[in-house]
Amino acid sequence: MKTDAEISKQVIDEFQFDPILRDREIGVSVKDGVATLTGKVDSYYEKRLAEKVVERVPGIKAIANELEVRLPFENERSDTDIAHAAISALKWNILVPEDKIKVKVENGWVTLEGETTWNFEKDEAEQTVASLTGVKGVINLIEIRSSVSSTKVKEKVEEAIKHRAELDAKNIEVSTEGSKIILRGKVSSYIERVEAERAAWSIAGVTDVEDELDIDVAA
Image (cartoon, rainbow, N blue to C red; front, side, top):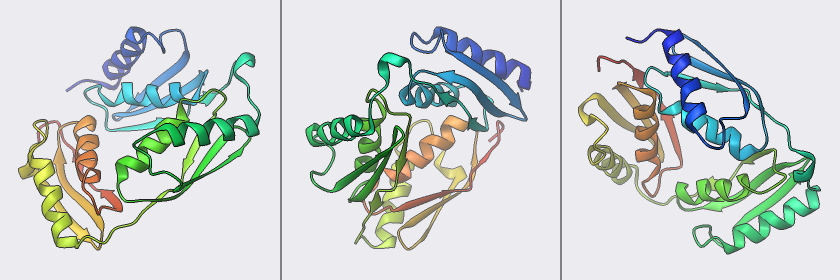
């Protein structure tokens, strides 16, 4: 099993190999498998990217992303400009339901509200505005509406988990509370835990996912 120091070094190495993050001021500390990221990045997109890079490092059990977004002067935008850009970007994204998402912007932070049928539509809306110039953060308050029975949802989630090659379905228990999915059991890495969540969210009718999976490298 890797030590915290070895995991920390690997995270730093991953940043150095990333063409976007290699020159950023990112501090990394790891304790008991929990990685804490500190420092500054030039955009909210880079903050999200840093987290995705850390996800794939073996030995990571959780991530505390404390990176501060400090926009370069040339990337500063007014809230009005950001709002217009966000509305336009969402309108042009075929994966986001038209006229279902409302946008509010305050001090560079974008708040998304509205309703979707699928979680991927909610995620797509966030990703669309996250990469816009001037955005410092995104608050995603979009709600997922479902009319699918909980029994059907549970069956579909179990099937989705079985079809993901990187997941050992026999170690993952799926239960439901209405349209909320609860995942219990063990996975062998943080990225597997993330993939189990993604499998659950990929099913129509899922409005919430409660992840109670434990990370056990011997799982």
